[in-house]
Image (cartoon, rainbow, N blue to C red):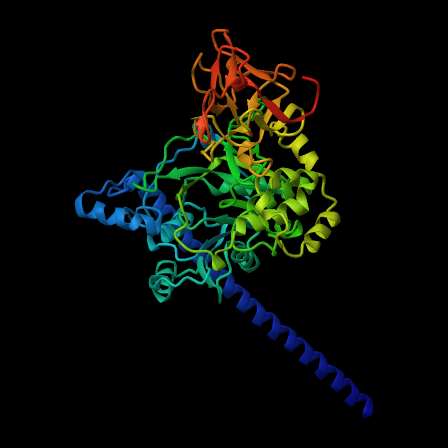
Length: 567
């Protein structure tokens, strides 16, 4: 009898175990099946929305459709002009344009022939905003949803950095919920003003897609923009990639049809610059291939989420805005990655002449952030940054020990390696030159001086009292190629008795200069072959220099501050 009871107990346990397994299996099957069905329904909804927009986009008509300019008249124009200083773009024109307007496909025809893999990583598009105007912010979000294949678009994160414009509160929340009930667009809000850098870090940490794509809050993504980015990152996960940026006119909201592209550079004052693709990158390269770039502007870029954090994300010690784009650019190249522009991915961007919002504390965040960048990444070349920013010497740039340790841990290369291998075209004012520094006329103690003019424009070279190294406006080089130059621009001989313009270096004969250290003269040659001397004539402070026949006068005598060889 006891043996029979034991068998019955074992049998009961077996039955209970089987029943439990059946119950658990049924429960998970039911729930997972339900989630799968819901996911399929959401994907179906998103695909339908995507296809409907794509089919109708070319047929849309109305103000600003197809990226056309909106021209205002009368009272509307006067109102727009009065608001331009506050908003830094034409908000009246923008508000008259549909939030989901059509824009022209400005890709090169060869881009339409490129086939991308069907299996690509998913994207989290992160859009940071602080007091952005309603229409450009939502036009950015609409463009991403409408022109991104749903299978690749994981989410769009609108990260509100403590805005206080009333319409960006509950009204924005309700609009997003009603317009995208599938939840593809999400709003995340900071509890205090963080600034662009920390807000982007918060967005990156909240994102769950495979790839992080950062966009400014006044963009319009174009047709086929997403696949080239994801394809490149799938191929090279250690690449940071940027779309080609098309200009959206700040006055008319017209979408540029220029279709060309450039890559990024930088000035020794650590500001981003645009530059033409160097000739070495045009050889043996198809138009549609990614093109390497030393730097990026920083507003629009993408990276594999794991790689982004592995190489240090953003420097958390940087404050608000400024310098972070060059820091990421240098670090990516020096620490085993690559930075590229993707010709077949195009995104429109409203280029505004000023920021329509304030920065917390009103500090020189670009200057302090650039100090951190220079101290951690630029090695001995930081001297060239401080040549431009002597006012920052001795200022507190915070604790950089964690970033120094990051560089050691990642076994990053030197900044000289970066200059030699990534940006060999970069002019270094005090290396591989005959002479550099102040160019002084000893009798008058006047020096060549840009007089703080914009060196992106052409202007006549000035003179000013020599500042003895205190002013970067007086730093010139006599290059190994005999150019009398600044970082990107060269002095040009025009004619006898003419002023001397500073303009883009071309290598032309009339941009070649010679310095005779014994006679203390600097000579240049006109396009017609006439040799002339640099002459200050009778000019005083804020005056100009000229080219005249050499006559041995005191006004034609010049010395350089530093000589690196026997000229």
